[in-house]
Image (cartoon, rainbow, N blue to C red; front, side, top):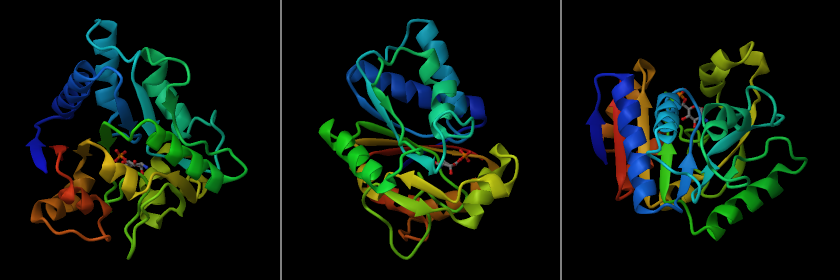
Length: 235
Ligand code: GLP
């Protein structure tokens, strides 16, 4: 894992956007794995700016997001579907149908998990996976536990995660208690990973990564086993 320490969130965002732009230059039809949360927002703004300046083209690329709350309507402003439309997809030139976020409004979430995972595999897996990280080390919604899931699955959310995400909702009680998330398998099979660690609440988890120990109690620590992870840090 390569660490790049930044002085500011702007620097983190610029560097992240450059890595995505390089990926699309090298392979215009890249399969991008995208993330929500506050960490990538500045990077998405930077990508929109680059698109408006004609420096980046998403027309041949496709994307899969890591996760979505369950149950939640796609139009709900707190859904990750809405978040991605609002923060990126509505402002750049992905073609219709080339971006996918797990659907939190389906009747059968297990079926959605299977079809989502298969859709990623049918594209040949993810070329560049963007990740944020929870203060407890979760990636996507793979929460600390004795065992971690390999495949896309429905999961319960930890109280700490509900609390961390409550800022986006009216109250902690209105945060959905479940989510659909990619498992560790699709993430670890990505050819390249870009991990964004932003904010003071991530200090402990960052220290744990630097210590170089792998444990399911810190799901992000498995990334230490991946051959091509760039971690951009701004605490
Ligand atoms: C949510 C998402 C994660 C994200 C995390 C960190 O829990 N499911 O994918 O990485 O938030 O969020 P933030 O970047 O706002 O700290």
